[in-house]
Length: 197
Image 1 (cartoon, rainbow, N blue to C red):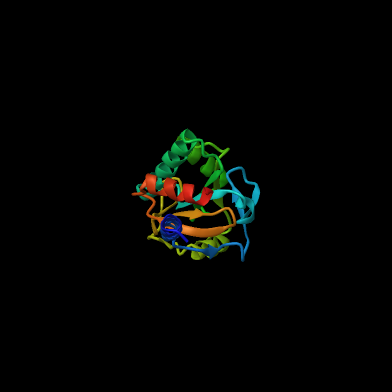
Image 2: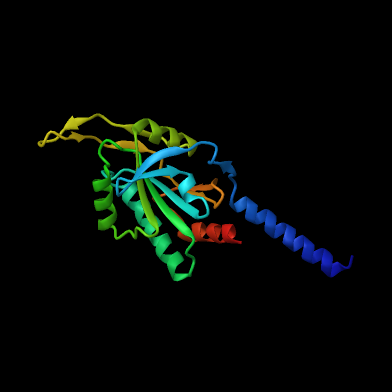
């Protein structure tokens, strides 16, 4: 084997190792299914309904005053940049961990205000126990603060929660997690490109 071949093989090996280091997780999400509801009130099954697509998934609730709007906006900017780059096999999911208030109608309004394209985006909610179980798979926590009642008789509370965006590959494996509110968009896009190769 000549020197050029050795150098070429070394470069290929180092590149493949460094790419794998960029995607440190390899957690199979397909071992359990979750029946959820999308923004139209339609039944959907996670992760079956995302298989075959790279998926960027954020964890939010619509009454959040700070982290969730930033997380959603960072996902929106990522989707916009991917569109500009001609990368289209990526789905965006926002899972609400506040199903008591985040009904499909509320999720649609939340999405419309933020100009989210439902061709690429799905907002999900579901029964509380199902959502909580799914969140455990992603190691995401949400704790409700003290509750009060507003002047219209509606519950009013906020939630302390994990600031998270997750990257899922086409086979339904969790590959990487990011801090949603301060996401490095270029890092996420580069990781998506690795999954595309």
